[in-house]
Each structure stands twice: as C-alpha cells, then as structure tokens.
Length: 176
Image (cartoon, rainbow, N blue to C red; front, side):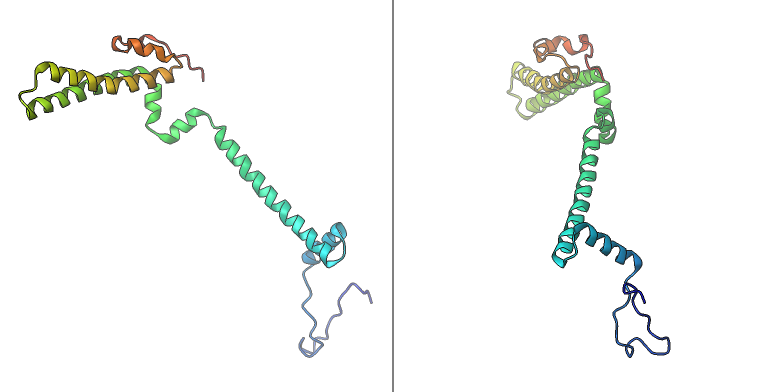
C-alpha cells in the first residue's frame, strides 16, 4: 500500500466506528499544500511564512489593479471629464457667448440692484444708483472675463480692455 494514499474504511462500518479519521482533503487543497511546502519549506513555520507571502502577493496584485484604475481615471481627457460634469461643457465650448452672457447678467443684476436702492430710498441720487449699477456689473463681468481668458489660454492683462469686449477679439489658443 502506498504511504501517501489514505486508507479507505470498509463500507459496512460507519466512519465513527472505524477509527474516526479526519475527512480526506480535496485534491486541489492537497496539491496547494504540497506546492507551498516545496516552495517555502516543510516545517509548519516555513509553511506559514509561505502562506503569508502568497497573501501578500495577492494584496499587492489588488493594489496594482487599484493604482492602474486611478491612473486610467486621471489620464482621461478633459472632454470626457466635461461630459461627466454636464453643464460646464457648454460654457467651455461657447466662450464668446459665455462672455456676452456675463455682460448681460452683470448689467441686469446691477440695474435691478440700483432700482431696488432707488425704490427703497427715494432720496438716493441718480449718480449713486448708476455707480452701484456699474460696480455690480464689474463685479460680475471681471471674474467671468478672467475665466473666459483663462480658458482661451490668453494673458489676464487683457482684462484692462474688458469693457471694450477684448475677450471677443481674441482667438482660442487651446489646442486639444
């Protein structure tokens, strides 16, 4: 009889009565233990170290796949990012219209605020209401214009001419 092959119990006796041997492990588990023992030694401590090494290798593989997924996400093109974000894409593709809408929004907000100011206090002069309107208009227009110039890869020095529509004169230097 081969010493590596476990003895089979007679079929007429239940396993409890026949000497209560532990169940025979599956062939795959036996093979894995034998390979681990051959690779990492035969003592229990060496086998434990080998199993720890296998677990560490599996963790490293998992981390490598996570890192590759993060790299893939970071390498995505800006257009894919814009599609995921939704509305920002329209403003980036229509920079001149964004500038015009910034002008209109600033003017409308300034006019509305100056009207509220005049209605709330009739003693406010027309010059003060006009000054409030222009200040609010500028507060809205300058950040919008700076964003448009930044998106066109242009110098922010062009903000000095923003009241005369400088972002509309400039072409887009963005290549990609």
